[in-house]
Length: 251
Image (cartoon, rainbow, N blue to C red; front, side, top):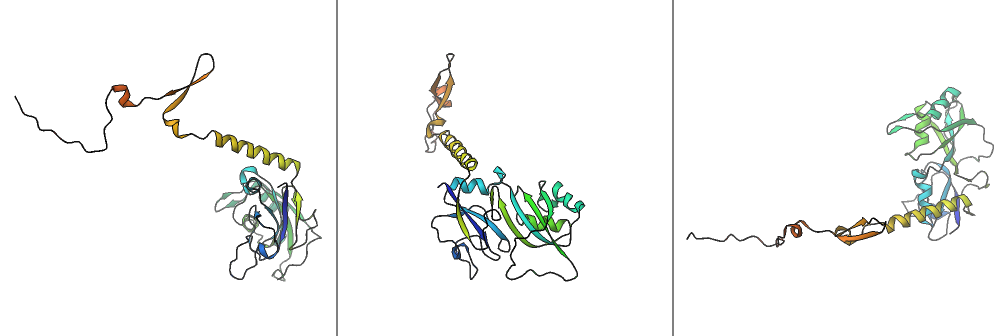
């Protein structure tokens, strides 16, 4: 499969196909068989999800090892200063450790539809929007990051994962579309699968305990059978049965 599914997940939708009570799931919006989400998005968060039928693609997107950046728009309570944003850029202390440095800036988005149900906020406290780009995937990370600097998140939208964006694709809430994998991403998938096959081919066999490889002086490799301690000493191996003591008589 050289395509990937982009889905703009609405608020209060589970990022799974299986039912869970009366909550909406991906099955309410996507009717393609054999596709699975590459990573998750919280029930109370909105925005971009990627789905695929290719296990390698799924791994590359969801694994933090490959550091595919994720971009979020967070509506926060209050108006963070440049000093506050600098804390996000340097990394903030959370219960599970310090976050990696993030890209953070204040924004004024003009393409966001109203949420249903609407965001609850206090009349006396203004709200503002912050764009955060992170390379991690800690649980509810963006919400905890903004709370750590004193600006709780009221609404959270993931707008981009790597090169894929609901903003540039003009993907409305609840809509999905199939787009081709970028050439760069296809190359990463190819290299990942190639390396995985190499790792599998190098896996030890059942005979590896009895043989070892030795490099000859001419550079060739010979395989020799390892000898056991009993073979070196000439002793016969013990059987699994118990030893029976023999009675001896003196002459």
